Image (cartoon, rainbow, N blue to C red; front, side):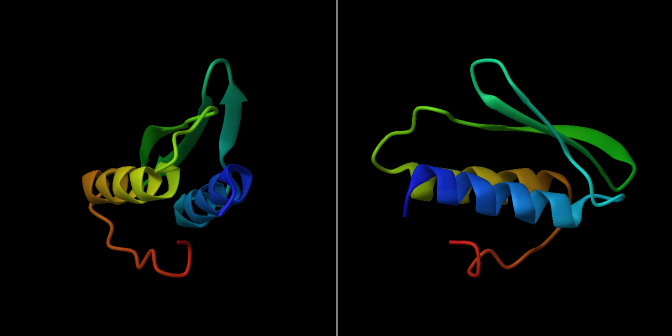
Length: 79
């Protein structure tokens, strides 16, 4: 799977989980996704120059982020 496809799927997933279904995307060196989850403003970073194991790394990072929000989501449709 290509990097852009993975990033788009992660962005859409995080957008659906926000309180107001919107997310702010900024890019400096990395893509910064900022949204409000359960009343708290949180930020998630995506890599612009990924390694060969990008999909596996993003799956792990996204799961860790969702656990910190105390949300359980099935990631199998994404990855």
